[in-house]
Image (tube, rainbow, N blue to C red):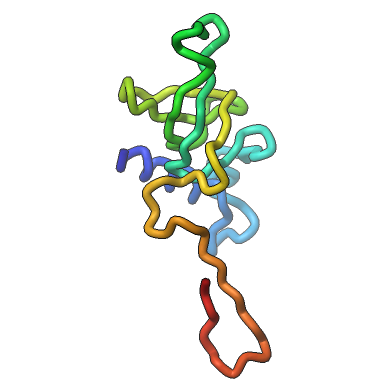
Length: 130
């Protein structure tokens, strides 16, 4: 899984502008390619989703989908994401999926999202967290 995380991090880095080229990403500079995130979604690495089985493979016993982990966007497929299937230990590409829950990333230190409140009129220079 570390290799998938590194690959996803490199892909994210290459989609964003750099300090040296603040208006263009490395993908635009070297490949002339701009990923369209309106078509290909960008979900955080490690998000748990329910991936849909192809319609021909759906039965009463299998159901409509299975839980999988997002490991990045599918570069060679329009609108697809790469998923890791923990049961078969294989990487698959899907276009139909559903994110599970309000806070989809499992295994974080905090079970609730961190809220940081910054007040301009506060005499304390550090922000308060809850």
